[in-house]
Image (cartoon, rainbow over all chains, first blue to last red; front, top):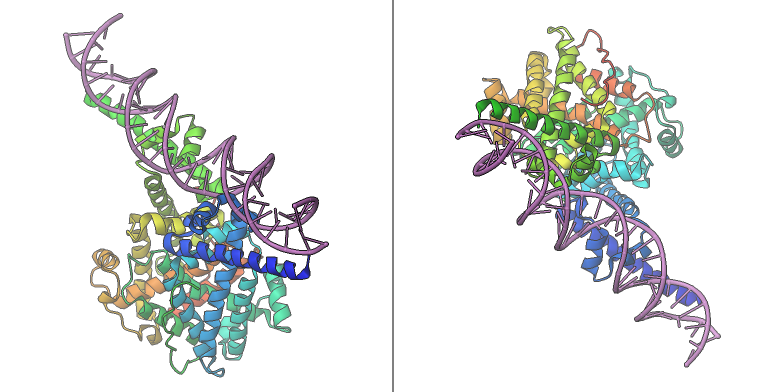
Length: 245
Length: 245
DNA sequence: GTGAATTCTGCACGCCGTATAGAAAACGAG
DNA sequence: CTCGTTTTCTATACGGCGTGCAGAATTCAC
């Protein structure tokens, strides 16, 4: 067994693995999470159903990886949108984060549901994914930058680190040492605020479809930023996201 | 065919229908939405799988009815919590609504996911359910009561009725004639704010489990109420919800 | 070419939603 | 009590699903 051979085999293996994931993502976009079936993927790829088991031990394992990949791609977009706003405009950066998240979610509703919906809850069962950490830390950083401007009313309910789950608190504390726990708590609330309207909209709870729903979301982001004591120079315009990745 | 007989038969039919639903809800609570299978229900009830088709044309039809039932029971709870707060304490009523919603969601996570998750999005496909109307109108009423106190900043983005989907706007306008469209927009945002943290928490995105996460949510509700220019006398305490209905 | 490691196929099992045909049961009328 | 009708249920079948397992096919170093 040559080392050269090992590499070649590993390459092939990686390519097949990637192809499985790509096919799965395509099926996801076309028909929702239920459409991701190992047999359908295999059929699409022209191989037998059981062959997939050489690459993923289980359907749930595949879903876990997909969630992580998709989640990572969202964060790429969201962080890019944030970085497109000057670093000293914290309010604008926060708004950009939220707007980019929504833009992506509307372009990839099934992906959004995959990350934030039942599947993740069932399949991941509370394990803090790497991408989730990124989201958590990223938002906390933004809120930390706003923290000096936060009106006193926000800080009223003092938080202790013990208020939060051990794992998530540890992650954030490691990434941002010396952080006030109140910042983390506020960051989680900010996250919830960004997430709420998007979740309702993507799952069809804001009426069949909300005309001009971006207006609503922009108002929410503006209000959010102001509640942090900031005034963004202008609400950033986040371009439409292309579907898939 | 006696009329008397017809009634008796209708009664039996209703009882079986109800039993199917109850069994489905039990399975839902035990194993999530995927555990609701017609065959499992039939097995549980000691009848053949196809027999269920005499009562529900399709699995999706059953799910649709379940969503409506569960949604209605949530609204019963939420409205009761609201009415437990004096009518002149609008801030308290709004907070009570949100707190009761969260309490129920934590006690019935699978039910929450059924109503607000993928299933509803797939199965209902944007049709405005009766229960959703109730939620919409109820929240809009509360926000309408707060509207005079709303700080100017909130009203800045003026809304037109045409901003909203025709069906939902029509429902609200019919229930509350002469309403300022800005109230409806704000109500939707309030809904999103209540929904966001709950959705994240129920689906396991706030860390494996957030210790004392009620603290976080209470802070959010307090901030929400204040952002409406209100100051609740005291954040109401909403008792824990018993699971199932 | 030969032998070992890897990858894939074929088949089986039990689950699912759904359709259809026919048995079983309920019931009013005679 | 029996007949015919209406309602409800069972039996069976089809295709699809996730998942294991035995063995064929392929790949590669020697």
